[in-house]
Length: 115
Length: 112
Image (cartoon, rainbow over all chains, first blue to last red; front, top):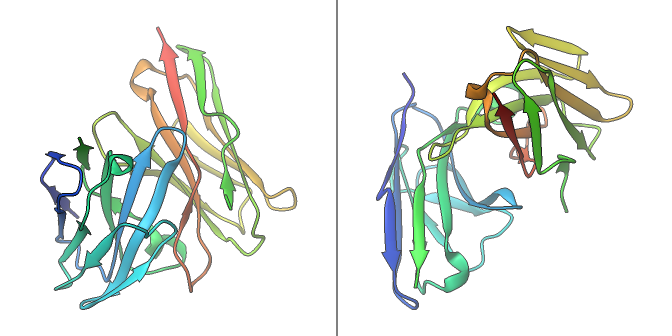
């Protein structure tokens, strides 16, 4: 069964600190995504990647970096965490863009609290 | 710019009723429309999907009705159960070239 795992599952960070969220998928998918979820905003795309060693900006990339060292792994990096980045973060993967290949498989989420 | 819109942030129905969740989109080139279901504390998961060449897709108690001309679709949950209480996301994809767009979600509560 396809699987996307995230670590940590929850984290408390201090304002101005560095935070790294990790994602690992065993789906053999080329596409990976990072979303944040906030009440009233649904899922907003931060960064995505369609090949190792390359990342692209999504709809809300400011304040975030991403890293895709391999097909299986995709990280989200907050260099200087801010209060406004408190949210639940989801990683997802898909085989391709378009049609049923575009079905996204989500991880369980990381709950981040920035104090 | 919200390309996929879900008109209701929340919806409450009684057990046994049909819940209707609405979704509309802007880009007439979208041709694949999945609905994802998310339970508290979990990530979203695909529930049911429809392609734009169809006007209806049924899977058990879940049915998507699709209106290409009006650029809207709806998810009908027949005989709603308390276990259906979740947040439902409508999404839309192009045939290729760009990433899937998500609506803001509708939180469904089914009251026993």
